[in-house]
Amino acid sequence: MAQINYLTVQDMMWLNLQLTKSTQKWDYARLEEGVFYQYGHGKSTDVVAQAGRFITGFVKMAPFAKGNEACAFAGLVAFLLMNGKDLHLTDAEALAWVRDVWEHPSDASAKIEVKLEAHDLHTHHGTPDTRGILHEVVARFPETLKTLVEEGRVATLI
Image 1 (cartoon, rainbow, N blue to C red):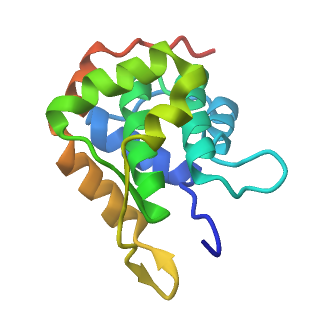
Image 2 (cartoon, rainbow, N blue to C red; image 1 turned 90 degrees about the horizontal axis):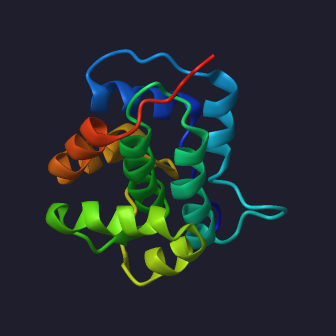
C-alpha cells in the first residue's frame, strides 16, 4: 500500500449529522483527538492496528453529545474501505461484533483482522470517494447504526 487514506474531522461531523439526523453539540478538541486515532505512532503503516485504535479511541473521546458509537463503527468500516479492506460482516452480525470489540479493546486489532477481506479501492486521481464510501457504509448497516445511535451514551460536553 503506497499511502494510507484517512477520514477528516469534517467527514466525522457530516457522518454524525447523517446518523443522528440532527446537529449535535460537539467538542472540537475531543473530535480532533478522536479522528487522530486513525494515525499510527511514528510511521503510519499498519491499517489494522490503526483501525483498532480508532474504533476504541473515538468512543473513548466521545466528541459528540450523541452518536459517538455509531460514528466510530461507521468510521471504522469507511477507514478500512478507503484503504482497500473490508469487514466481512452483515448488518445482523455487526452490533454484537462491535460491542465485543468495545468490551475487549486490547483485542480490537485481532478482532478486525479475522473479519477482513480484500476490497477493490475505487479512486478518482488516486483519492478515494470518501463521501460515497460513507454513504455506502450507512446503507449497508442501517439497523446496527440505528441501534448504536438510540442506545449509545449521551456524552457530557463542557
